Amino acid sequence: MSNTSPHYFIVTIGTTGDMYPFLRIAKTLQTLGRKVTFITNFHYENLIRDAGIPFAGAGTEEEFFHTLNNPNIWDPKKGLSTLFAHYSNQLKQYLDAIESASIPTPQVIIAHPLVISGAIIARELNLVKSVVSAYLAPSNLKTCYDPLTIGMSSLSVPRWVPMSWRRGLWWFIEKQRIDPFAVTQVNAARIPLGLPKIHSFLTHIAQAPDLTVTLFPSWFAPTAPDWPRSLIEGDFQLFDTTGQQSFSKELSDFLEAGEKPIVFTPGTGNFHAAKFFACALAAINKIGRRAIFLTKNQAQIPSPLPQSVLWQPYVPLSALLKHTAALVHHGGVGTTAEALRSGTPQLITPFAWDQFDNGTRVTSLGAGRVIPVKKLRPQNLAQELHTLCTSEPIAIQCARLSSHFTSPHYSIALWRKIEQFIFEGNL
Image (tube, rainbow, N blue to C red; front, side, top):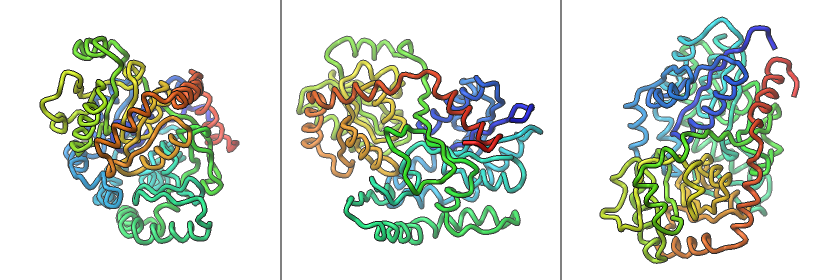
């Protein structure tokens, strides 16, 4: 490594679940004595600064909520085109933030997959030295191998399907569902800068970075043969926020008043989950259990709630889950990992994106069950909850899997390995 300490740009996009793993990375790098600048939407400025990390904003809070308020963002078939509607402008905003924060030291971008295209442009413009793509969930890496679950169509490909058909399926999806808008948007940012066009979005973000890092462990998703060659297997990057002292008196009293409740959450960024909570309330009433409903948008919550159900806008799952019987959630990888860490049985109700694949992996591990949200009904939810809360094999497996989360220093070891590759060229 250079005698000059490197400066890292942590560049990400998305909801709070996308922020926390990158916050963990930023804090790890600070522990190693590295300089870090966190670049994301201004909506998260206070979160980042409160964690003690320098911040540079890209995009506006108005743009952030404009995207989340569009119900198509949680539609498997419409989500990607919705997200890419103004992608070229977003890339320009991130580039401006990178350029304004640049300093004369070796610089590395650690990027979320959805902003890798902007990170590559920054490298091509000599704003940074290296680009590391950091994948939060396995399905964000294209593969033809099992389990082949494609979130943009909620399609799960059976194991018997031949490899030639799988490649053909991906060719069709890329040419018909991804590239018509993704490639167009990326090139709209590249061409005015005098950079060559790209022709395949997934190929571009897979092959252009200097290094790919998986932010999930091999026991959750082993490396597929067709993932990028320059790849380091990582682990879940769980960021601990405040602990039980952050519980409101209302929540503390509720937890002490009866049996462990079941927690329901559609994710911090889902503002279109009214049917999810209505179904949850009906199912809870059927089986006579207590529940906690988590969402910042109270308008999604049925009213009035019985005394057996408590609404909370936000509670850190790292503190809450140890007091609960089960977790019902959307299947975001961060929420999935928190349930695995706490040994909490989980029922995943995927809406879109990586959530279908994460659910498949949880069921394969024996740690939970899955009902796609479009198939969620009070009766089948009640049945699955009863199974989840009474199954001894699931409880045993959840406890076994939680034993993987024991090393307090794995993150430091991971980033030392990454730096060895970036600065010395050795895996």
